[in-house]
Every structure is written in C-alpha cells, then in structure tokens.
Length: 353
Image 1 (cartoon, rainbow, N blue to C red):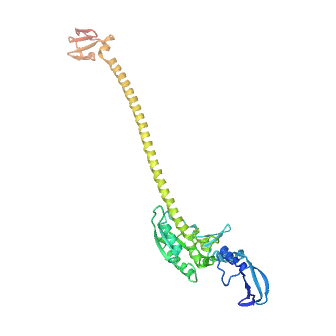
Image 2 (tube, rainbow, N blue to C red):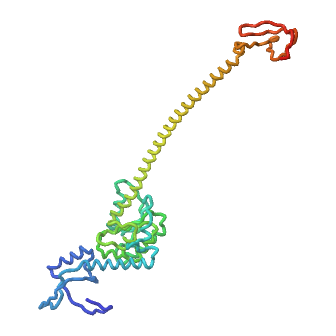
Image 3 (cartoon, one colour):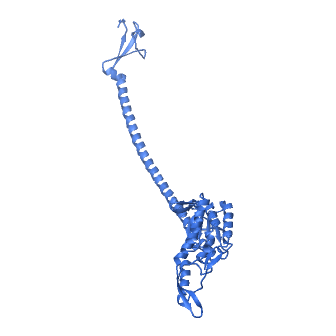
C-alpha cells in the first residue's frame, strides 16, 4: 500500500508463489530482518490476472540492499541528532563519529565488571562462562544489571541500568553490554537515542558484545570498544589483563636484570677502586721510602764524624761542646776531638777572631 499521511492512497494485493518463496528466506538471512508487517520493501513484481483470484502482484525478488539501507539511515539519523544536541559527548572527526566514552583510558587491570544483559539469556551465559573459566585463572568480580535487550521495554531498561552504573562508577573498572544472537530489528534498543547518550556519557569504558555481524548499532559506535559477541567481549577483558600481567612480568625481569647489572657494575667499580688504591699505596710507599732515604743521607751528612773527616775539630770543655770563644778562659783545660782521636790542651790566650 501507499499512504498519504495516515490515509491509504493506493493498495494492491500481492502473493509469493511457492517457486519464489525462497526469496523471503534469503531476505531474512541477508538482512537479519524478519518478514513482518510494516516493512518498507523494494520488490520486483509481475502483474498477473487469475480467473479466480483476479488482478494481483506476484513477487519475484526482494531488494535486500534497500532494507539494509533504511536501517542504516535510521542509525545515521540518531548519530546526527547526538552530534547536534550533545556535541560534548558525540562529534564528527575526519568523517567518523567519536564519543567521550571512546576516549576514556582503560584501567590497568579490569577486574570489577558491570554487566548489562538479559536474565537467563544465552549472551549472559556465554559472557560469564568465558570470563570465569578463562585458561589463565584470572579472577573477576561481576555485578549484574539485568535488562531486557529487545522489545518495547528494552531501551528504558538499558538506560536505567546505565544510569545506575554511572552513579556508582567508582565501584567498577569496565561496563560490558551483551546480547545473544537475533535479527537486526531486535537491535532497536541499541539504536535508541537515550541509550546511546547514556553510553557516551558513561564514566567507565563500555564494551559492546551485541552478537551481530552485518550492521553496526549506534551503541557500537558511541561505546568504547565494539566486540562481535558476548564471548569475544569477555575474552577482550581477559586479554587486556594478560597484557598487564605480561608487563608486570617483563618489568620484574627488567628490574632483576638491572639489579644484576648494577651489582656487576658495583663489583667492577670496587675492583677498579681496589686497583687504584693499591697503585696509589704502592706509589706512596715508594715515595716515602725515597724520601726517607734522602733524609737518611742528609742526616749522615750532618753527623759530627763526617764533619771531622772534612778537617774540622770539636772542642769540649768539661764534657760540653764549646761553641764560642767566650766560653773558655785562659788556663781552662779543653779537649780537642779529631776524626781519628783527641788531644788535651790548655788555653793560654784569646784571639779576636
């Protein structure tokens, strides 16, 4: 049918005969959209007249590209509205949409996880199984925020839980939003304007594992990191933590290597210092030895016997060396010592010199 406002302007009956029924299955497979009421479709048809059923359209083929394009147009419309109304949260940069949440830095370790998922869903189960049974035994604290992820109530549920998480952001390192498989029309909650706004404004990185391959939801665009499935979302958290553990291990090895190098350098410096001290001590001892030898020679030169050998004599009076003529008088007995002996004498007179 074709409408003008709420009024039907034109209508025609249409059928899909058995020969072309596979086109519906192909359409659902390619687009992920159930063949339901209120779809806008582009179709190839044949006008047929049947004697019993009258004039009608026979559907021959369905244009999947048109339907996918309409879904993408709706998402683009939401993103443009976000960029216009909350440009501090979502904006265009070099042709791509960027969000405040996408620019948040991950915690060094992501162990406190806030999980938004439908209670009892396959997506929730797959996420928790991958997270809690990881091969490296990394432990986690998971706080669940149950929400419907499809249906009329889904968008309101998800926004409510996002707001709760934002109010208690200090308790969490990361937010995981997951959903199991389903058709692309079931993604309407993740294309919702209010949900996208809350994701962009969330103070903790939001990881999406919504479980679809063909299209990217608005939540994927404004969230921090898009992962294809809940399992992959959980694995990404563990991989991040393993990177940190690897960094710690590498740092420990680097510290050990640096410590060993420092010790070896200390030993080398101590050995070098020992050699320098030994050399300095040897030089000092040799210097002092030479100095003592020189002093000894000097002392030898100053010995009285050496002086006497040079032709000088030593005068003693009553056992004391006479240094001046004023110390002797006429009649004093003196002893004159030579290098080879001594003589006794008596002072008979004084000279002037």
